[in-house]
Amino acid sequence: MSRTCDVCGKSPMSGNKVSKSYNHTRRTWRPNLLKVRTVLDGTTMKLNVCTRCLKSGFIEKKVNVPKPAVENK
Image 1: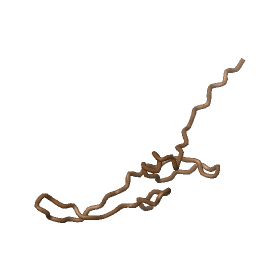
Image 2 (image 1 turned 60 degrees about the horizontal axis):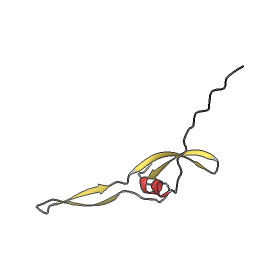
Image 3 (image 1 turned 60 degrees about the vertical axis):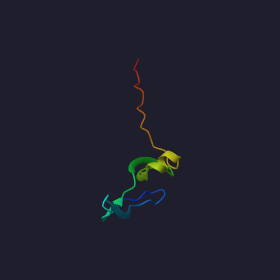
Image 4 (image 1 turned 90 degrees about the horizontal axis):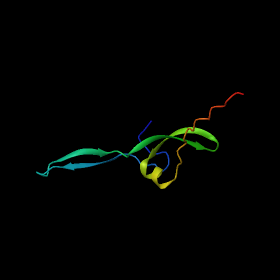
């Protein structure tokens, strides 16, 4: 399983870290991914979603609401 967003396909990027003395070393930037439980086509599933997609409203989180207790008479 790779570190990619299941909605937009955002994945890690690579580049150079540049020090004050202008030395270059390789580094990676990883997307901010969250494992979110959501409903797609009537089925509940977990997706890796970046926070930008979550904030933009492409995916709605499924929230578990506890059922009220039923009183017996």
